[in-house]
Length: 130
Length: 117
Image (cartoon, rainbow over all chains, first blue to last red):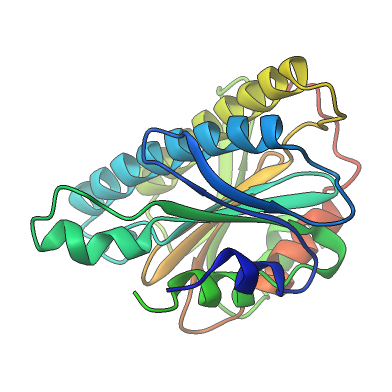
């Protein structure tokens, strides 16, 4: 499983964080640029938890209606801002969820600077160990 | 060449289109049926409006500068949906890389008005 420190080693990483499915921030690391603070990270975590749930509902509905598979489960949800993006993933929750476990690991997220962002690398890192 | 036409030249892009923020029209090109493209445009528009609203709330609650949300990406095991401003594209993860697609959309739509009209 990827750690916050490993996420912070990605190109352009500005912050990394963990949050519950209900959105509460559990742990975080903020880079020296300090373009973001804990309050904003907590709000972003709630926003991302909500949007990954909605995206999951839409992906399942889309697959059912179109018979086009490959959208579910949602692996990552990304918000693109002007200067930075937020990428979150709950993929590491899928295996324990399938196994019927009721206690699931947290979601992971990273904030990256757009100019140097490597989205593919971030997706790969967030999928590590899943 | 239009943004949508140029998107379709990127490896991995299956379909692309744009929608009116007010929801009364959409257009698309690529490998989707008309009804599926319509449904995709509605979902993309709804999520865009929702994330924009959420970003404004965060901006209001934060003491720091929090610029408007420009777009979003939903990545599944085989396909990715990428939206910036009012342009959306459907992307096949196996046949292309998403970095150039996001970079192109960000650059091409960098000066698109943010009043959502």
